[in-house]
Image (cartoon, rainbow, N blue to C red; front, side, top):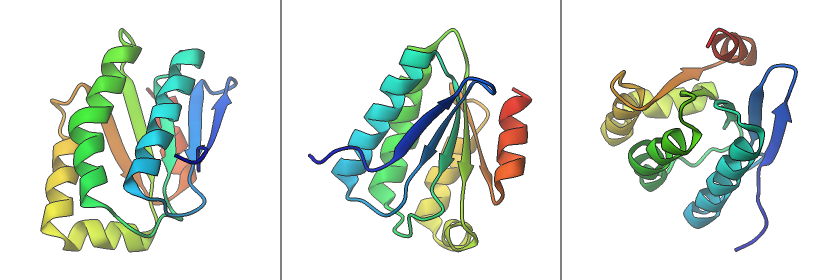
Length: 136
């Protein structure tokens, strides 16, 4: 596995972990990236994450299933008693794919449901994404 392909920056002034992907990556690489995100979150005790996926054009059904059903619940458990809040910054093209693909919509609806052990929201602009996290 290659090195982490995303940048991970903890913002102590906001108590937010900011993660940005500059490009697409294979499923195994993205899973390694998310593992590194969780390690950084645990190191900083940071349960508020901004995930910037605007430059990732490929939307993997497998990644959607893995993050919403396995990874995010595991991350929420490891960061407890804090509640994990995930703000996902998406491009308009990604939002259109989510809206037009029933399988993607299924995982998205599952991940956004209020009964999850984490809270996740999608945003089209960074200001709104950060505002939502700061209010948590």
